[in-house]
Length: 130
Image 1 (tube, rainbow, N blue to C red):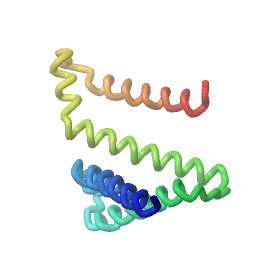
Image 2: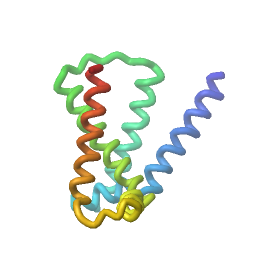
Image 3: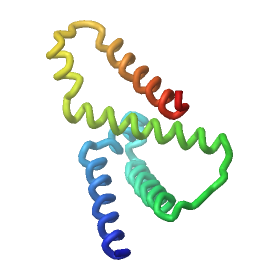
Image 4: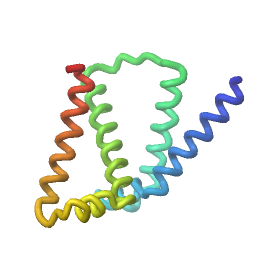
């Protein structure tokens, strides 16, 4: 069972990393930050983060790193997930399809801010259990 579980986990991880690679999130972030020469470093950081997160999840290692570290982890995780969602939406051209279907000529910026505010509000309500 251990070998089967390890193999299945490896396959799932490879799928997730290939998905992140195929939508081009790492080069896009590096390009926006004008740090194109560090793309390999960014990719290595994502891989190390995935491996570390998987190990912490599987082995349930408890770490008491303090509120500040937890806040930084939460912010960075949120930024990564947000970038991933935006990159996926851009890949699917979701906003272009949306604006054509609702005949939106002006105010796209307001719609994007409203979506972001809704996601933030929903996340806060969920995590604060309100």
